[in-house]
Image (cartoon, rainbow, N blue to C red; front, side, top):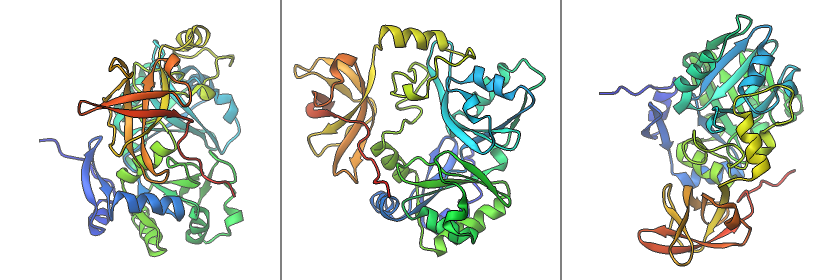
Length: 364
């Protein structure tokens, strides 16, 4: 019988009466008081997520930039200066997506953050393509806790916890990262709201920090709300919108693909061909014109029932007020306001292609 891994906050989750589930080999909280309440807390105030199941690698050495630039389609030279980060992917030789990740430049090293379900796969991929002794790799996933503080009040709350003025956080732009004592704090997140991700090396500090946030009234949030929040923001999730057979271009991530960068990178030729010749499938956001929920694997159809695509993710759009889904369809059927159907339990449910994303936060 498989023994599930536990994060350092496992006992805290049990103390808060979390419903725990198996996720990527970890016993993780899917919800506490309920997905809707947690979702709304993040949209209106702030929520705290335990995402310590995520993976972290350190890439160091004199030729780190050249190595990483070969590994990913985004341009690592955009973060030659310390304390900046960028979103990118790992692509295979066929242009498919092995994983999506964030890379931060620290003082000298690079911090690579990968998805929990892909830690071993990504670690092997990085090592098997390292042929240079001037590049060093270290997997710190088992020794790193990660908290995500998300919501419009997150900056105010974090400054309170760190005992600094909000303007002194020095994390003014998205994807900036700073060191505060033993913490690494990045201004980023996966909810469509303002927020921070806090990397913690000492697990005991993770527990005390978590408790401080709860004392300030921050809502503990589980993976259920994390999913509904990220879907409204139309952020991709590996295993849903992204997989080894789907390119970042098909997933609508062309803004993160730098085909014109000087460095060659894995999958570049296929992605270049897709850019020049056109895509065979394209991600779309769908408004479901019914009360039913679409799920991954449901077929997207025309009015006559002929299948043209497949649903990647679906849920109730808690903030937007109607059921939502993402799906892959042929580009010829991807126009905004195009009417399609999803086969849900042998019923053709009408849907409308809408602008991506479903939800965009209001800027202050």
